[in-house]
Image 1 (spheres, one colour):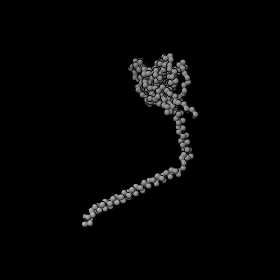
Image 2 (cartoon, rainbow, N blue to C red):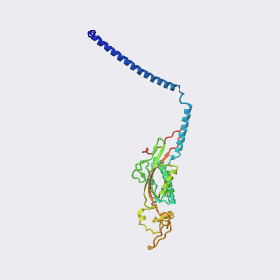
Image 3 (cartoon, one colour):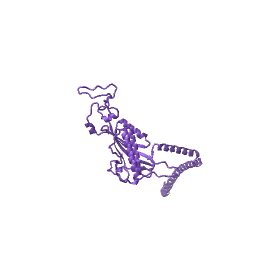
Image 4 (cartoon, one colour):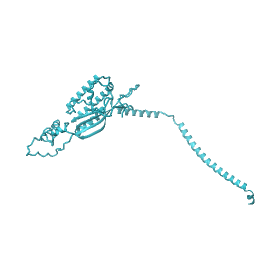
Length: 341
């Protein structure tokens, strides 16, 4: 103990040296463990790299054949999808005289088709959304192709409506063309213009048809849209109670109706159209009876429900694709007045 007291400095230094040596040994052991882990990870990565290097070179024949097969599948799907869309026919060079002639002949044909189908039009001189164009002496040459396409679409839509034997056409509207068709035109859907989708080369035109019919005839209209060669996208269908068989409601209410004049009080013109003139709602002929008499009760198993006409407002769009580009040619999609909203 006397020696330690005499050599305190030496003993303290020796203790510090021992502790330092122990810390160094601990650090070396920890570093060795981390080194071993890093070495193992490096070895694993080297094995993965060696596996990639020794693998058969890509692309190989099976992969190329699989890619070709997938390409054929996609091409078949695209061609099948194109058949469900109408093609946007390129309008030949047309002047005002040619368009006016086409417009008048188309309107005249639509009037005859409506008459043959027994469909009442909004007026005797209905222009099928082209009233302003009939008045104008000169139309912008850049608008004539779009007018021609919309006229063809209107003709197709009316063909579907007339083929379904709707009671009456109350009105048509279409997307405006150019800057001359503004919000004041009642034949134009306000704020809407034809557009294009440059990604697929599709042109989009919108229309609105308002008409009166029964539910069965509405079903035939929808079926006609589905079967049409054009691709119609029905945006909305608004159904309201109709005002009668395509006639003014106030006039129909004020007109005298004999007891046997129509099918359950139906307008005589509509009853005659469906072969129900002089028949009661129960199907039996019912002549006008004296006041003292009572009408016979309906027979068993005969319908006693009279369906009311409906007022339909149908908003739809027509989507047409540009003709497919031939090999070795590149043709830009036809531009319309504005881009799709």
